[in-house]
Structure formats: structure tokens, C-alpha cells
Image (cartoon, rainbow, N blue to C red; front, side, top):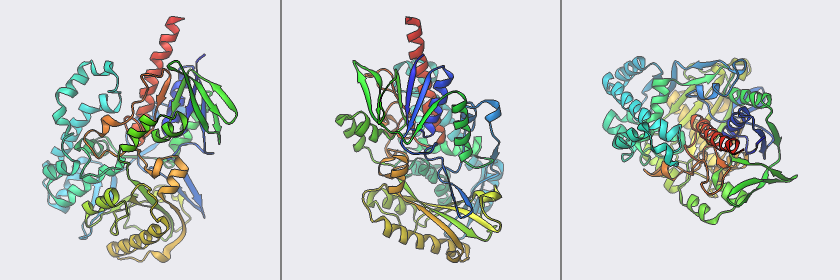
Length: 491
């Protein structure tokens, strides 16, 4: 029986453990913290429950294909994905149904419906051209480039919008400033700047509006909980609070890893840690680390978990309060490395779906603003100032007083994100996608020169976010299948 070590129990590592165990491989997962799921975690305090990290699910089938039938859970498709609030008083409901969405945009923003449907058709084409090679496959392997689908993608490369910025593409296709801002926001889904990131990222709007946006019935942590049950059922062995200290290789192949308890032999090692951390600590490599350091880090987040007294029908499950100057906000994030004084504010209220997430007559507000990666800024000062700016903004845009309604509070800043998740500098998605070559620069899911060594998670190919992390596990699973199959043939 082959043995595998998975380093890190984030979503990518957990999904990989399940897939490898289904192959009959003996899997050991080592996790430095005392909990599973990485960023998909939950927080309880003062009678409130919060999804501590991601708050929206697309492509739920990537989760379900990992689970036995009895462990699959109900996901609710959102009728309104997000409520958008603009500084001029405009409010737009982003319906998941494209017909309702275009009617809403036509009524509120005076943009013809066919302009929006035309845009979404183009994003669907980009997705269909890119998904097999850039999302669900590894273009780092020559064999994946030598098929008809990949050839079609390469021949239609200009249609991928890789040489336009997302903002430039949106401005040309949509025109109306507020509508452009709505679709520019998708750059933040992988911690990037819409004024720099390639327009290929427009595929995210296709996932939400053409394929659907969902939330698990019991909250996002239900994903982690169900995957853990599946892994345990398959015999995966978990070691929490036990970090891997070093990956051992010999003559071009993995031999195992060192933990505080000693050496653990394995033919397969899968890293689900930030790739920067991997080459700094687990398999030191100055040359590879220098290349990673040169890449611009993604943005981070500053999150206030507010237990709110009262109920607020003005708000939906997901809400966005836009900055009056989006371009300046991103200049602050990536150039000045500071939080902008007029930040875009995101509020996620799961208690509007699950009343048990808050005491009677209360709501649980997950309040987030984009933040720069941690470069030793004065975060105590930033937190204090940002809290005041957020409250002032919400009170101004909604005409309500909120400060006295906060009855419970916890805060998560970039340094704490780094500490809790191992994301270097608190950069949630590893490297940013602020260049046309960013996708190609991401670390591959394998090492050509070290047999048995693989990589999953948001800091490697294909990138950050739930679907991409799950896809990285699927890619590695396919590679390991080939390796194990080759071993069996030789025997």
C-alpha cells in the first residue's frame, strides 16, 4: 500500500486526502493548528455564530463529488446574490436569474438588457475556452497541451481577454460607471486589482450569474464538517497541532517528512501550505523562493464580526456599499499599502437565512473591507480608524445609527490571518493576478524534478477561492493516479 502525507488541512488538503484515500492510499494529514478547514471556519461568541471566512459557494458539484450520498447536504441557491448600494443613493439587487438581473439593471441604471446578456454570454465563452486547461487541468504538463480542447483554447487565445484589464473590458462592454464598478468587484475574489488584472477574470461573473451562487443550508462551515466526516470514514488519519518541519527527498523523489515525533516515510507528499512558506521552511530553496517573493502579493482583509441588536430589513444576506472612488481605493491597497478612508464595505448576514446564528431580535454581521498585505503597518491605528469610517459610511448611506447597536465584537486583521492560516503577509490568495502573466507564474501542482511531491491550495495553480482549491486537489489526484498506476504496472 502506498503512503501519502498531506501537509495542511485547508480545503485543498482535505479534498486531496479524500481523493487519495479513495485510491486505497494510506493518508496522514498533519495540521499545525487544532482545527480543520483552513479559511472555511466558524466563530462562536456571545450567542452569535459566524462563518469566519468564505461566504459564498459556486460550482457546488466540486464539493458533492467528494462525498458519499448520505453526507451530501442541501445548498440554497440565492435568488438575490448581492444587494449593491452606491454613494449616490442607487440600490441594485443582483438577481441570480439573468432575466430579472437585466430588468433590474435596465430599471435602476438605464442600461439596455441586451448589453448585460451580451456581456454574460461573452464571459461564458471565456469560461468554456479556459476551464479545461486553466481551471480543471494543468497547462504545466505538455500532455495536457496536446489535445483538441487545448488546441482550441490556444487558437482562440485572443478571445480570452488576457491582454485587457478587467476594468477596461467592463468599461467597453458595459459603459455605465456603476455597472462597471459592480463587475469590476470580481477582481477582489482572488485579491486583485480590476485596473490591472486580466479581463479573463470576468469568468467569475459567469459562475455566479449563469451557473448560480449558493450557500449551504447550515452555513459555509458545513463544507468543512462534511468533508471531515468523509475523510474519517475513508480512514484518513489526522494529526492536529503537529506541524511538518521538513520534507525529505533523495535521488529525485520524495521519501517522507519530519515532524516533532520523528520521520514519517511516504512515497507521496502533498503540500497545502502557502508556497512561500514551503520553500522558506519545509524544503528550503533560495532560487524558487526569490521568484515567489518577486510576485506581488494579493490583498488581504480586515473583518469585524459584529453581533448586532435589532433586525435590518434594508439589508440582504450579502451586501456591498461601494467606495466613491474605486480606482483610488485600489491604489491605496496595492501602491500605498494602506486602507482607503472611503473603503468598499461588504456585509454578510447569515442569520437572515439561519436564525439560529444570532439571538432572537439580533443579527450577525460579518463586516469586511479589503486591506493591503501586511508590511508592518500600524494595524491598531488602522483598525480604529477603519471602524469609524465603516460606521460613518453605513450610517450615511442607510440613514440609521449603528454604533450603539453593536453588542458583541471580534476583529480579524492581516497579521492575525497570517498567524491563523499561514498565508504569508496575510495575503489570502498568495500572489495577486495583477499582470497578464500571473496565471502562468503560479507554481505548478507538481515538481518535475522530484517524483511524488505535489502542491494544492490557493497559492498554487489554478489559484485561490473554493472552486479553484478543490480543482487543485482534483488535478493532483489525477497525477497521483498515474504515478500509482505506473508503480503497479512495474510490479
